[in-house]
Image 1 (cartoon, one colour):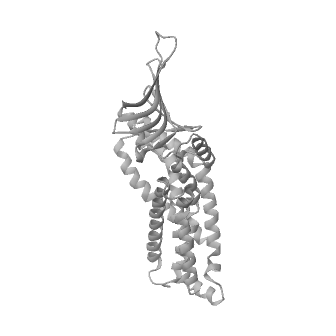
Image 2: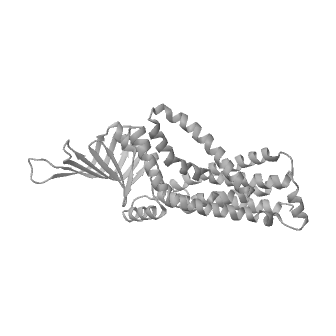
Image 3: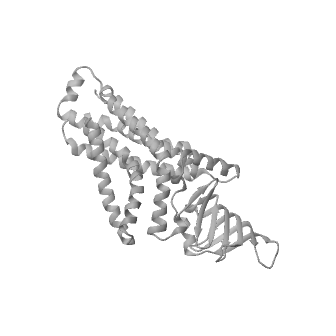
Length: 349
């Protein structure tokens, strides 16, 4: 019971601080209050999901620290109970929270993230081209009278694969279709299209006119260029949808390393709370009463920050193909398990 109170309390405190800071930054867009409320109603569950591992760690450390200060741990150890046995109920609770977190992250958050993105990019930022949807194996965007899709976007590397751009007139009749196998983002508003075709649909011609090209440089509007700053595609897909997306694009010979890494990272991050608690538990018996809750807070912050930094770095290695996607996603957790095993072996109790 004490663990759950600390877990909920820690989550509420951290969430309140985050929302307060984020809300101040959002006011610069001068969006109506009703729109901001809708935005945060979709965004808050995702923030909670990100904070669950840290809240688990804080709750476990505070619980064991309080037991240490009141000599409950000393009494249990004198009865022959090991640290692992004393911590077992906390680990079981953290495991259950991790399972529930995985379910929420896979079944609920993708839909909420897509609604959040719509409110943010369409209603708040007025940049609808950054809002993306995923159908089958393509990522879709819209900008004014242009609808376009790509099969794979690698914004950080400045390229995309499998581009289709549909141009419509004012009456929404298709006037031009541009296809390209590869795209290079040369500058902010200049794209180089490689190995593609240009098709014109003219009223004076009964048949569309198609012309192939090896390389073609096109100037795009600032609105379309915004897709390079679009949110992560994997955030709006469940594991099942993401796996289907990866499979179809791999069949087309496209680079899916980024999406494969995200697939495994979704599972690995859900287990982070359990792993962090496993590593943090031995610290509660190291200094007995010295430092108390302040020491627990310092330990929790240090461990959580270290995990998030290592997780982000490892995932980046997976994106770039330096590590296999599975290893890149799970390496921080593997290190946590190794570190916790070492700490428990070295623990005097």
